[in-house]
Length: 375
Image 1: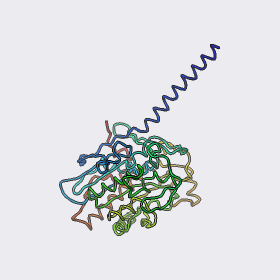
Image 2: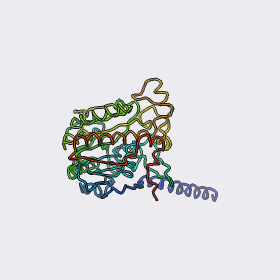
Image 3: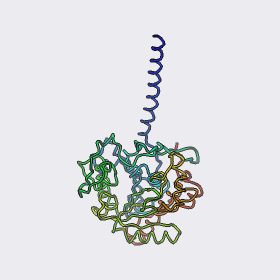
Image 4: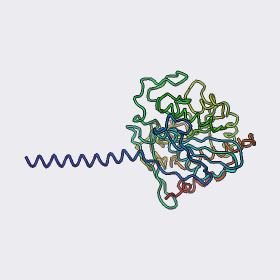
């Protein structure tokens, strides 16, 4: 009898210990990584300043405003629309921790779907964090989910009907930020977030907007710039110049009948040139092997090497993979070229940004060399 009692106490204690460590792991997913914006940063404000409906929710997220006394245009750059696309978030962080503004304004949202950073996709085996070595230590960043946390928005409907078009999609797409524009003030949390971003664009008189993404190497629209018709001339010239510098890009126009996309709805509803950018990430798609924090950085997956040999991919996949430093470098190079061409045609609304990390230097030194060492 005493033996059974002792065994029961042991099992109870073991359960409590396991529960404790599980709870710690779960709660750590709600811890935000630290950012160190450059001296050009003039203001940090919550997205809820533009729409109070997301105040005190995990849909609220920091907005970083960078400007100079020299007037000019305003660009919005969005990272973290899909928090499981690491180059999206890291591109904005590298930009905001290094940039210097000579004229105009840059507005950056590194965690557009803040709620999506607080959980991971079930059955995908994604890491919770990935790490960079900086000059004086290690920095970590969250690897989140493609969608808003179901704890914050539940349940999913059987069929998601986009507002206001009525377009029907799978029910889970109701938590996809890039299917919810233009949003609405009385909608789901995801719709409220997109509504707040639309209000920001209006209130801050944004002239040009970019949404940064990643996709699987087999996805047809990858290593691509997707553009609203209002930005087609701009992005067409950007792609031409990038190709002359041996950067291969596809140019795609926003599908008119696919609603809810950032670039489509920003352009249609707010009449601004709107752009989405995609790089190839081996953590996505259906050919990948096991996932871990190292693979988020190296982009190396032996199954994608084999898929490339069988011509199953939309982009070349080399033996050394497609590392994060290459994907972030491509995004930064593209932003730099977009601003250059924009300024050529809009001198009265120029946005002159210096100290954007150089693509080739990033390939040599790695992403960590362009991150502030932190505390």
